[in-house]
Structures are given as C-alpha cells and as structure tokens.
Image (cartoon, rainbow, N blue to C red):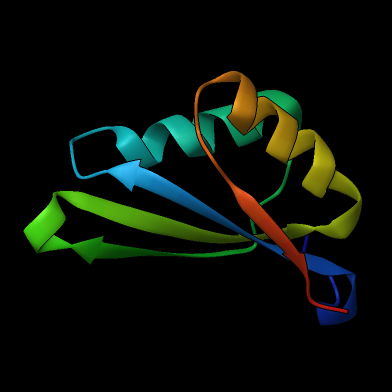
Length: 81
C-alpha cells in the first residue's frame, strides 16, 4: 500500500554497520504493523555506523518510534506534510 506523500513521516535511525542491523528495524516494523514504503541506508565507513532513513505512514510514526526506543535505538521523526 502506497501512502500519499502528505501523510508520511521520515524516521532517521542511527544503526551500527553490521550484518542484520537493518533487518532488525524492518522486523520491528512488521511486528508493529508499520508499513515502510520507502527506505535508504546511508553508511559512514569511517565510523562503522549508518543511518536508516525510512518513510512511514504519519499515523504509525509514534508507534514505530516508541518501539525503536524500547529496543535501544535513538530515532528522530519529522513529518513530511
């Protein structure tokens, strides 16, 4: 299901550069019923870290953010409307 751009929120999640790190985020989204219509992972090779930038339905953003925080991530959320 594709959400209209005005109903999306951008979630930025710092993640370690290791196998499975991005999968953990997508698994959490699936467990919470949060759809991710678009995503990008930006790597910072010098620091062995990355940032997952995901778009979610704005109505799911707080739920997803809370789940990420509960698992030790430090997400930031910005509405795209």
